[in-house]
Image (cartoon, rainbow, N blue to C red; front, side):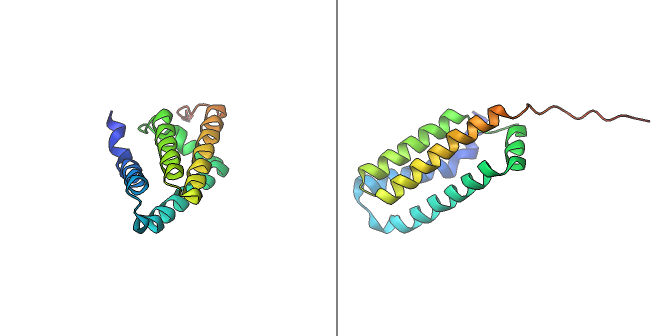
Length: 119
């Protein structure tokens, strides 16, 4: 459960999305759209850059995929229930890219420690 510390911001955003959807707080729309757009850009960059994927693959501590899929599902559903169609569509795109990235990561060769030859 050490990975939970890595997800504090993601959990906070999910809580904000839930509050914004249930309480109909339009003041949170712009900050949430900006954050969501940034996450989408980072997902696109990670998916299209093999070097980044290899670094992710080598990471010793990261949250499990199911956790992010759960968060993205909640974020998508909360946005759509709150009738924030653009925000919901962005979170669905993030969720799809996350799934595609996870598949791409599984297809990469597993990282192994480099053996150096000594002369």
